[in-house]
Amino acid sequence: TDSEPEFVGVFIGAMLLYMVVLMYAAAVMRAAMEEKTGRIVEILISSIRPWELMLGKIIGVGSVGLTQLAVWILGGILVLTFGLPALVAARPDLVDPQNIAQALPGLEQVALFIALCLGGYFLYAGFYSAVGAMCSTEEEAQQAQFPVVILLVAPMILLMPVMENPNSTMAVFVSMFPFFSPVLLYARAGAGSVPLWQIGTALALLYASVWVVAWVAGRIYRVGILMQGKRPTVPELWRWVKEA
Image (cartoon, rainbow, N blue to C red; front, side, top):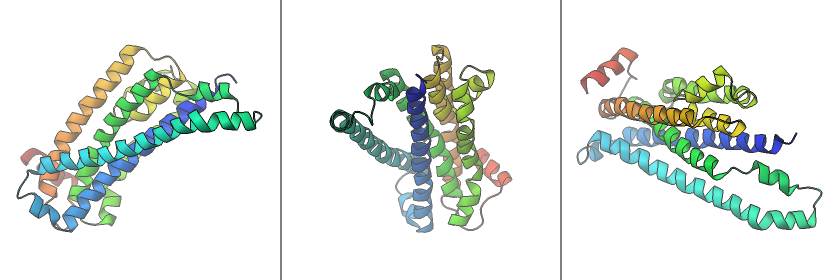
């Protein structure tokens, strides 16, 4: 169909959002665990506050992620600018330039991609930093991060239904749910026309959730990063949040 190239482009963009958020948010957890198990954090905490350490770790890993994402995008631009014309000239039967043009995102989609990528990363980096702080072993971390993984996998399960029917009640709701919107709002906006107020509301909810998650994660991080031994239970975590 005429919309198939655009459909493929939106799907690739949504998958890229999912992979970027997952890879770099999980890297924050691993970095926190390495410092905790290596007792490096005990030295660092003597000179800076725990929430500053957590924020610095999230920003540092995020900067690396953004740099790598920029390299990927630049590589794609170079391929489209120099490689694609040569391929079309040599084998015009293999590539349809019109299909490629339809698959490429517009400036509005690029801006939305960046806003969702940053919001999704900071949201899940807060979750993963808390998981890294409360766990002492890789096995504990695998178990503790299961609820976070569910929140990341659920949008991928809903991706195709949302793209096939972007204006359904279900699609509108899940695309505005903060933990799903980094992937599903982009997919919905690319697959159909989304009112600006819905995009604005979804982004506002996403960034408000970033603040809430960061506040909770910071309190868990403050206590958990210095504790060794058994992983805390849910009631213990709640006490950390209230008393930290």
